[in-house]
Amino acid sequence: MKKQPPVVITSAARSPSDQLRSREIRYVTMMSVRAGCLILGGVLVSVRPPLLPVWLTVCAVAMVLLPWMAVLIANDGPPKTKAERLADAAAREQRQMALAEPSTEPTPEPVTIDSDIVDPEIVDPDVVGPDEERRRP
Image (cartoon, rainbow, N blue to C red):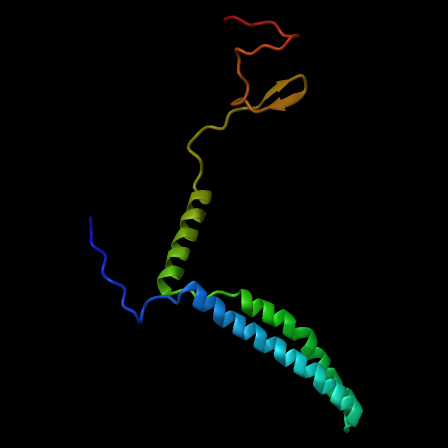
C-alpha cells in the first residue's frame, strides 16, 4: 500500500460549507443591489431628473437580470483544477474512442414471429407459445 503525500494547506480545496457560505453572500449581495434598484427607481420617479426614462430603464433591466445572474452564480461551483480538467478530457477521449471503434461481435439477424420483429437474444427456442409446435431437429 502506497502512502499518499499529505495535502499542503495552501493546495487543499475549500470545504463545501465555506463554498456555500461565499455563494450565499454573493447571492444576498446581488439581491440587495436589486432591492436598491427598486428603491432608486421610486426615488427617481418622485424627483423627476432629466433623462428619467433612461434611468428607469436601467433600473428595470437590472431588476430583471440580477436575479437570473444571482442564481447562476449561486449555483456555480469552484473552478476545476488543471488535473481535473485533464482527467475529464481523457475520459471524454476514451468514450469517443469506444464509440468510434467498430464492434467485434457479429450483430444477430432479427427474427420475425407473427409479423413482430423480435431481438434474437431474447427469444428462447425452448419456450413455445400455444399456437406453435415444438420443432425438433
